[in-house]
Image (cartoon, rainbow, N blue to C red; front, side, top):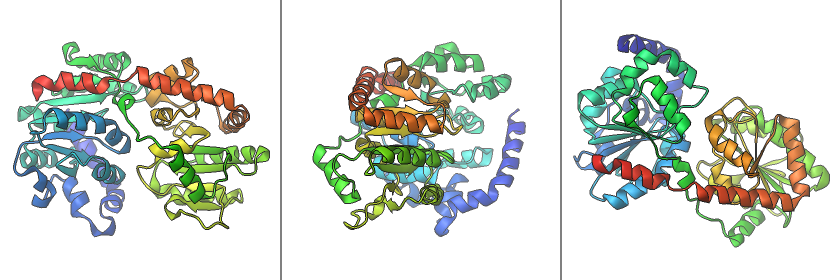
Length: 427
């Protein structure tokens, strides 16, 4: 089965080669991309480890990097003697790891899941323990760790309802793969049950909660929010819709919602944050098609004569704090069929939250928010526009929703401490 999986992966790589070269070879930084993903790390890539055996923490992209930040800090506080290596897969994840995880001694790209690549990587890094965030179940990597007696722990684990049927179809293979996971620390009982159904040993699966509930976004004081508004040309009291982590088609929905808001208040603004920075031009086109001027977040402060109704965020890692500007927030990936994105970041600022019907990746969390009146779910773009306008017209209701979201978030904290306690014996 491993041979069949590897052949399938190689065929997929052949198809994806042009895209991979574009992603990891951009600007000539080939070594930091393709070479690292082949398991070839230069001495300077791992210089911070000084030849020690680190804890290897793998977080595939931006969301996972943000989720494990608190765990990394808690781990370093508990065991400052243990060096930590962080790996990612995406370029944006790597940039955010450099910016947000200074506690790590080194940051690299995760190797392709091919026997030669993972073998070279493990021989070079020599980890004492590997922590894989969320759904990073890589068969060849896990097998290689098992052969080297390296413990591997799934942290903040989740198996989405969308991916579960595929795993279940491959249950005989997955049962063998999951044997190489020493421990599975998962977000919910539903995730635990899915893992057990896939073949994980029941005694190795524990529910520790969602690390994202423990995220602590630096508060944005009123004077800083005011300064941001001034720098962006947003008048005092003007309603602001923040549309975060949007996918293709959702920018048009957010722009339509802004146009509906501006019928009531011509000073209304939209802060638009595409999930993938390479789609900035598409997002801008959605605004210009509606004859709305755009300003770039990185270009602030805008000249006094320039007060664009749409502010396009062209930086990575700022969204969590930018939600504080929202009179109302729409979390993307939910009108598009992308499974939704993190609704906890706007909750920390007490924002009223809207999302679409596609929240499979956050189903339990979304259900909790809806049950407590801490969010609203809309079925399509017209419903989004109607909900945005309704909340702008009813600030008392918007305030109640935001307060309910913040309270729910506070009640669910504690996953970091439970995860660290479960790891203690292995550290």
